[in-house]
Image 1: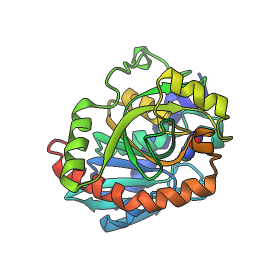
Image 2: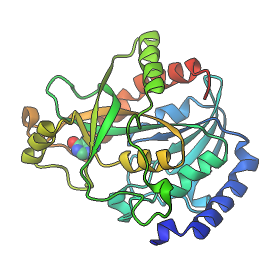
Image 3: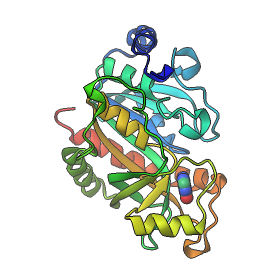
Image 4: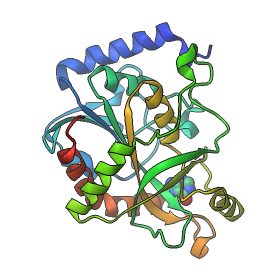
Length: 278
Ligand code: HPA
């Protein structure tokens, strides 16, 4: 049993986090996790309560610029939401289960639905920077899994329809209603933090990927383990290395994500407004 799956320790940390957050946040119906540079969504939350991760037991320390490291809770499109502005990445912690306590805490606060966002590189010439891509599935190429060391039959989580088909339909309806262009595709999870080589980008494309990034997949696996319904949207911030001579950088990622933030906010607000059973 790895420390990340010591159930008694996990329960204790979740209980501490819930004890800290429940009186401030009340009940939550949807959890959102915002990727690099995508803070605009948090700005749109009404009647905000803001809690820095540093004040919540078991929540990640933030080491990535472009990630605020706080929960912004309140109302968005009439739904009670808890927005995680910043996440723990595998490349920061060497622990792919680092988001287990935050996600379980959201679930214990009442969230049944989790919407994950990220910044990603495109593997397709027709999927240009600035576009939004709804994830339909993923390729886990990290060599690890956040449930390693977990116990019991619940660890054998089905990953068929992990990206909930009903939520995907709701996202496409929201895209039409809000006039936002929404592509869809398969996300490749790589550990990072170095970007891919051009040869790796060619390989990922051959394997069936559409976008590539360093997050989200462990959260999807953990969330499915917890029984949450999951949807995920990538903001394409750059072409993968070698496509159109691209040589990605973190600076470019933050910059393009911030510019696409307004469209993502519109999409998420339309999505939340259209949900009838979150
Ligand atoms: N590769 C991996 N992760 C990323 C990229 C990329 O090109 N862009 C944003 N996150």
